[in-house]
Each structure stands twice: as C-alpha cells, then as structure tokens.
Amino acid sequence: MKKLILSILVAAASSAVFAQNYAGQFLNINSDARSLSLANTTAVMDASSFAIWNNVAASALSDDSFAASASYGMWQPSAADAQLISVAGFGKLSDKLTINAGAKYFMHQAYDVSNQEGIYNGTFTPSEYAAGLGLAYRFLPDLSVGMTLNYIGSDLGGPKSASAFAANLGLMYVKGSFRAGLTASNIGTKLNYGSNNSYSLPMRADVGAGYTLGSADASRFSISAQAGMLFADSSLTAAAAIEYKLKDIFRIGAGYNFCSAESAADFVSVGAGLSFFGVSVDVAYLLGVNQDALSNTLMLNLGYAF
Image (tube, rainbow, N blue to C red):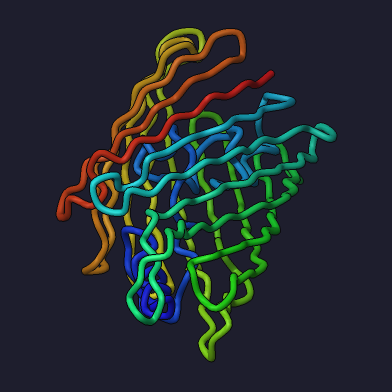
C-alpha cells in the first residue's frame, strides 16, 4: 500500500506532473507572495527577502542591508490541499558580498493508512523540506552572481525518507530602469526512498528581463517577462507580469504563466502589498486557466527590511 501511495505522490507532488523518475517537485513551488503574484518571473525579480528562492544574485544589488520574511501558503486547496511554510532573508557582509539563508516546508494532504488486511490504523501526512545558504557577489557596479547550496528532505511514506543536495545559480544585471536575470535551479543528487529507483530533482533554467517606468518618489510601472525550460520532460515555460507601485508604500501586480507540458496548469496571478517603516505585507492569489488545480491558491508574506 505504501509503495503505491509513494508512486502516486512522486508523480503528483505539484501542479506539473513529470515522468515518474523525478521527485521533489515542491522545489519549483514559489513561496514568495510578491513574485508569485507576478506569475513566477523569479529570474528577473529585484532583491527581496526571498532572493535565495528567486535569484540569489539580486541580493548583492539591493539597497537594503538586511531583509527577512516569513510566508504561508495554501497550495491547490481544491485539488492537493497542501500547505507551504517558508522563511528567508539576506544580510550584507560588505558593499559587494551578501549572505542568504532560507528554509521551506511543504505538507501534502494527509491520507489514511491501513495494513495488508485492509484494517485502518491511523493517518500519515507526507512532507518535504529544503534549507539552504547562499552567497551573492557584486563584481561589477551593475552585475552580480550568486550560488545557493540546499539540503532537501522528503518523506512521502515509502520504506524510508529520502534526502538530496542541490545547488541554485544566479546572474543579475541592473542598469538604470533595465534589469535582466538568469537562473539554474535544483542541480543536485537524486532522491531514493529505499527502493531500486532513484528520483532526479526537477532541474530547470530561466532567463528574464524587465523595465521600470517612473520614480521611487512617485508612481512606478514595471513590466517583466521570463522564459524557461523544465528538464524533467523538456517542457518550456513563459511568463509575463506588470506591477504598479506608489512611493514604495503600496503595490499591485498581475501576470500570466504558461507551461507547454500537457499535464501542467497555466495560471493567472494577482496580488498586492503594503510597506510601512520597513514592515511589508504581501498576498498572491492564483486562478487556473486550462485546469482548475491551481485555482484559489493563496500565499501570504510578512517581512522586514532596512
């Protein structure tokens, strides 16, 4: 029974279902409400507390010396009924060097457990987590590079829990109103749950660009676009988003995310945020387009920066 449940969870651990020799799909689930509200245009996202999960290189270009946030999300509440909790932040070690840290914990829907005779003997809640440290270095005034090393744990109810190590890489360029970014994520070892099969991590690569009109002292409009590849099934992704900010106090954004995989759920994202005296609150909400799986997904952030 547990082997059957394990194979099902490995195949359906996220909205995009890949071949069954891949696992750890939660790694590609965004825990940052702001970038999620902007359709996951993470490669080109300007620095925030969640740079370690977006583009770690962006933190070296930030004007803030310190930033930290916590988030809570209800992921696919009508389909998977999963929950995601995350904490992340960065601190400047020097004008050029920034250290990042973060952890996220993903809880799948609980299921009933029975023995070989079919007798119910409790419930089990599959869970997965990742924790990492990263460094970002600004080696040119407008260009930075970063790297994150993550430890990944997964307990889906198999003969044993699995673990792996992975690296994320990032490159970020910001010149005036223009920004561009490149990321490669989930490059690492395989997950093995105690069987003859090992499961690769869902490696991906993304590239994006964005442009901002306006001034931080007044109103600003930002547009972002991103394209990527999910190596699990060689599927392509594309996303575009727009955001309006009023004096860095209020923001509202929306975007559209597309994936070429037949099993993937395209979505429309919307979100808003407030910031006062360094304290920020952000919310994101998703609407599924070709499937209902992602509809009503909700993510909330609470953060502080100076």
